[in-house]
Image: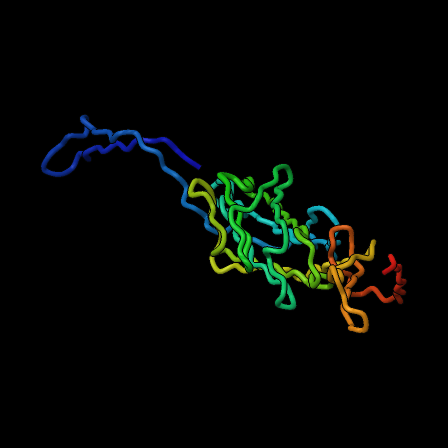
Length: 239
């Protein structure tokens, strides 16, 4: 909170001088409550356990921000946040996904994405009232055709050092770290057979050549769990 006040100084009647009747008054100033610096972050409701490769942006991690309302009467306002992203297997990473942040009413696009992090920045990513709580939902979407993304898992971690709170509000308590309790698994469900490698324009009689096909979804992501038998028919155009 903020309190406008002045200070008055008055001489007491004892002593060698007596200016009791002539006090002096300071200029007006604001007395501002100290920053509680104790807002917390925790995982909220579990994000989706699976992410369909052909689906739109899907909530994979919910971060709850709580203002404890201790004494400063200020809101907690987050302006920047960086999520640490891990994708299992080594062949895919955070760059293989589109990301979005949702605060319950407004969506935000990333300000930066690397192989292992995704960051968001705004004057107000979320404003949590004094004594209240709010949720930031991290959403993900597979962004390109992949032969390896099926069955990969997404892990998320965020720390208080990766979050910036506005100086006008309550800041976060130090040394906090929140890790997504259960990873999200990418699921590819085949809807088509797709040729990955075509034969050459001319192939020699009696010499083997290679044609590669895959089971894939509509975006061309390979379904690594498809089990079936495929036949090949020859259609001669004549010599």
